Image (spheres, rainbow over the protein chains, first blue to last red):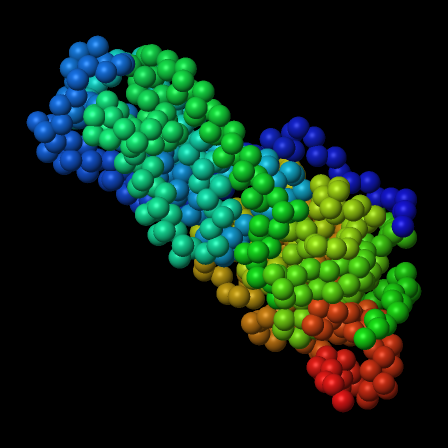
Length: 279
Length: 277
């Protein structure tokens, strides 16, 4: 049946897209303000690693000179970039958890019934999560400075794009997980089967040459782990160096995760329908 | 079972009567001859379980259509499909002639929704919830503020604008959700069991408010399982087990149910399970 449309739709121009993006970020910022405890509790985890684990292992785990370091460094100094990446990893998972929670509580429906494209809405959610994650990472780096882990001052500026790109990749990974997780209760499984292996099978806590000495196949796993490259991207940037391989892997992984997440939320693919149950 | 013929006429009556006084709608476009909502041959299943089976219905501008069905009839699935939370396996949905599947932005820009489950963010204030909804539709901040004030005034919640949603009663939350749905000045309003869990006064307010909007040209699809939410002016679509059992005015529904004496009896007859003789 063909119909002539009597009432034209309001055109959604670039300004409308931008307002939508700002609106999503604004809403996440408000939620963040309402849940300040979450912000600080997210810092406890890396600080425990830095203050207790790293101090305890300082004399057990020797770190030889590996790029970007030009001299021997203390273990605390070695783990700080990995712990900053850990902050981003957990923020990405927190965003994912929040998406699943919003879906169960119903508030995601408001987002998904926006006339703007779904991929744009998801990028809005992703950007909001990255902003919070980068802020947390900077607070962690500031605390680490008092721990006498002091990269060059310009490193704090140079690390910003690295933190943002790593945050985008990990946030997109979280979005992808949220599209696949059926219930909030399944999130514990994600922690055990995804987050911890991702973190430990990386260069966050020990240099990869040590992993290679211990197990060749584990070394390959670590190399294939995009989180390893996120850590190295941050580590190099913090010392004003650029690691093109890490940047390429992190950028590529971001695009892949984001594309799969958008597919997971695509109404035509019915992923949400499977979880909706219906009635 | 064959589906009763669709007999929804274009806005047959000039629906005057009770207005909302100060709650008058902003300038609305004149009613269009195009269906506000046209659902044709819609089918959907969750795995092997059919939720909707070849459902067709129309809602015309200015028409209050009651989607009447017991729990599990498929009403919420129909709403999920009509708001494109996900796509149907078969069939089509048009909003003011715009196909939802291929031109979702044009279709979604014209509709407002109140879901069965509350979708307000409990941590945010009433005003913040409404501003968020406006932003999702790309409405400029100053204009959004103006509309928020207007819609909250209409639903009698202007004095609670700064209140956190968590502190509101169920009825107040529903009012806020109606206000939110109208922030975008939709031409079609979908409400999925909006009165569930509300007291009599809140139910009455919501019904009166939405019927008032309808008289001013808004098309409304109101899903419910409560017969007493149907009035003489309503169009009715009886949905049961994923199929449309009957559609039309209250009188036509009585006739479709074999001359039932009242709507309650008609609804019972139309939704009873067919058993093999």
